[in-house]
Figure (cartoon, rainbow, N blue to C red):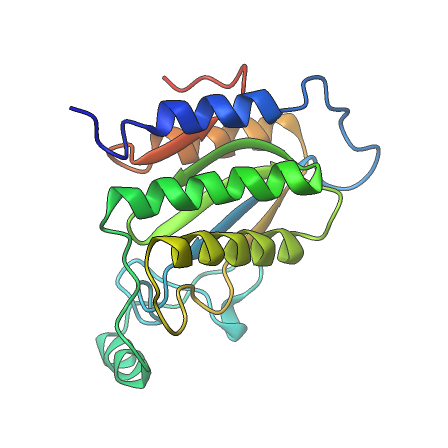
Length: 196
């Protein structure tokens, strides 16, 4: 069966062709970033899995505790429905957009996984992680607009921009993104990165 998700092989091949083999490890700073962002309204403060807010935004500290009342209040404040990528074509489009922005900016994409509610990407870039995440969101939104017009926010206000300081952290993040997300959806692994 030829579904949009089965076409990710073609998208992956396009990304592989644009990859820059032998990219040098940065002399200073992080080796790469683990960028994670969610669809608008898909992960609210108070969620049973925890969340991060301004008071819980320090690496290594506890996240917000589950709070159904807070989650309900957050839901009531939403201006529109949650953005869920239940359509495989949407997920493939977002994955392709991430590859496109990496190619345009000269960033190295190690791995990416686009899920129904969120996106993970591991990228090496010479720009701050917040810029990387914002560019991913902007490119993805433009490409999604080509599929279907949709007014309003597609993405949560921020996301997670974790710095990976050494190869061990990069390898752990790659394993997490490729193998610990449940059934694979729209997935990319750079040449030499194990998908199994």
